Length: 99
Image 1 (cartoon, helix red, strand yellow):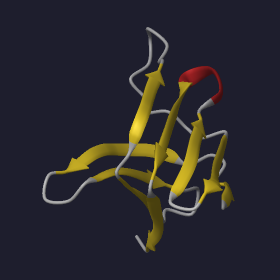
Image 2 (cartoon, one colour):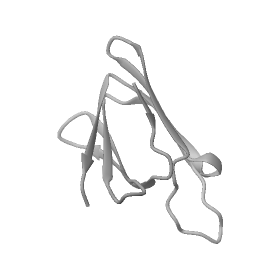
Image 3 (cartoon, one colour):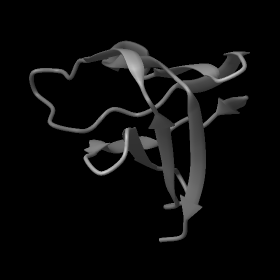
Image 4 (cartoon, helix red, strand yellow):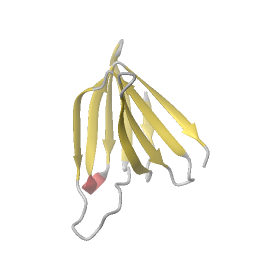
């Protein structure tokens, strides 16, 4: 399970076309890239909102990834008033890369 990652900027949402992964990249307050890779992502809900006068990417309020059962996880990325990303997956990895 994973919990935390407040005030990180969502910088990309991508599909890995060579493997069954949905990838979300964030840059945290310390400038570190945090990558979440979700294997066999499904039940994906992406609902992001931005003010009409802003083109800034969303910031995380809270991130929770919980194991529901063996080979099944639920992930929620909460962006407060800017929306959310929710999904289920078989497995996930969380990696860090220095700036």
